[in-house]
Length: 224
Image (cartoon, rainbow, N blue to C red; front, side):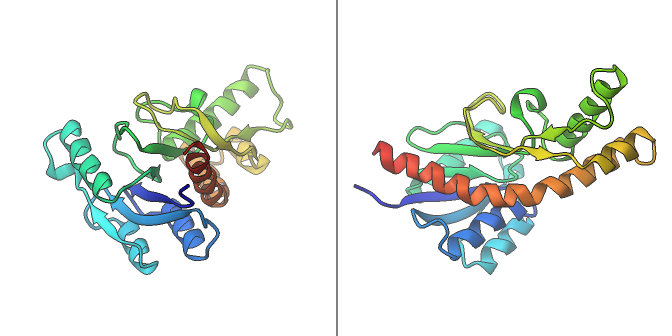
C-alpha cells in the first residue's frame, strides 16, 4: 500500500498560497506526500522564486505561448504524467484546468463557492461580492450593522464547471465589523473594502491549505 502521494502545485502569480504549502512540506507537516513540483502558468511569476527558495522544482507551462486553452491543458497533462502526479492543488491559478483521469485536483476559493464563485470570480472580485452582499442585506433591512457576518474560504474539488466541486475543507471567518462600518459610512470604496477583507482572510487560507493537502492525500491513500 502506498504511503505517500505525488503532489504538484499550479499557480499563476506571487505564490503566497503555494508558499504556505511548500513551507509546511519542508517542515514535515505533510508527511504523506512527495511535493514533486510547482508549475507556473506565467514566465517570471513570483511563485517560481518561492519554489526555488524551498528547493522545490519550478516548471513553466506558459499559457500565453500556446494557441488555445485545450492545447495548454494537453501540455499540462503531459507534464503531470511525467511527474507521476496523483494530486494537484490549484493555488492562485487563473487558468482553467481540465479534469485529468487518475489525478485528483483541488482548488482554494476565498469565499463560499456556490454564492460567490463562477467564471471570472477570483481574487478581489470575490471579496467585493461578499462585501456588496453584506451591504445589500443591511440596506434591505434583512440584517443590522451590528449583526455578525461571515465569509467562508473553501478548498473544493476542481471539476469542469467553475467552483462546483465537492468541498473538502471550509473555514468560517467573521468579517471585521470595522470594514462594514467604514464601507457603509462611505469612508472607503468597495475595492478598498475588498482589499482589507482579502488581507484579513489570506492568513486563514495559509493555515487551511497544508491541512487540506494532507487530507486530500490521505483520501487517495485510503482509497488505494
